Length: 65
Image 1 (cartoon, rainbow, N blue to C red):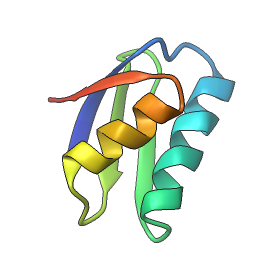
Image 2: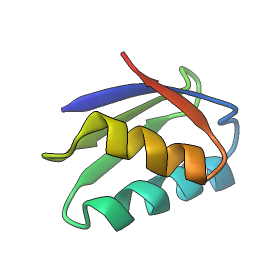
Image 3: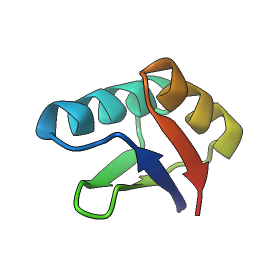
Image 4: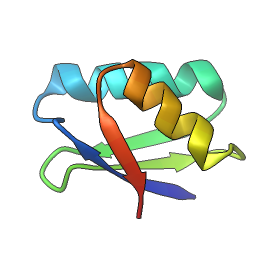
């Protein structure tokens, strides 16, 4: 399970954008978004740097926590 702190996520649209960006990398993955904490959990065998790059391309800064 990968966990990220994501800056700028504050609504359902933001959560959907993050889910879409990550599901393009790992279609079989499970993505959980916690808007209150600004965190994203990703159940996938994926390089964290690739996930961070996907979120950055979608307009969000992220870091592994």
